[in-house]
Length: 224
Image (cartoon, rainbow, N blue to C red):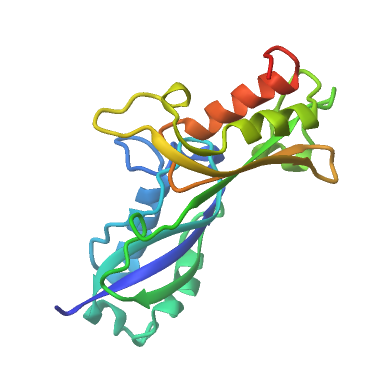
């Protein structure tokens, strides 16, 4: 068809973005990337992403794909090699978003529907003085002491295939049945509680709702 499908591996600091999805008058990850790609390739690129993140959510391994004309990859700086786009984009993108890798994939690859799972990490600082300043943009303060053992016990109860309607914001036409494959906590070298959450997919606001519910068990306000 004269087109090539590209798979992009993306990282970003979501603090100053209004989330992934393009929104009028807002600075978003998707629009920032699409604008840079369109400038380099001289073609209006449209990205499909594995999971649309909300405002303030960061990413280390976000995956997206797009279809571009083969002719767009034949410029002198790219010479038919999509991986060369990485350096070109690094010079154009702001410091809080980067495309780490780009490769040509088969036409049946879909960043959203080919994904086997999504994994998030949530960081809670329960120290009296709050989060480590160097990590403050990726760590949330929790104003009460947290019991690691109680949080892991609560998280374990939520594993498996369940209807997570109580942990999701309503979205018309969307199912709330999900398979929660991993949900566990540990303290890192800074004493921060790090929660790892993995599922086949997540509903709108499901991760932060799960974290909030489990943390309320960890600080003693909610029984197991």
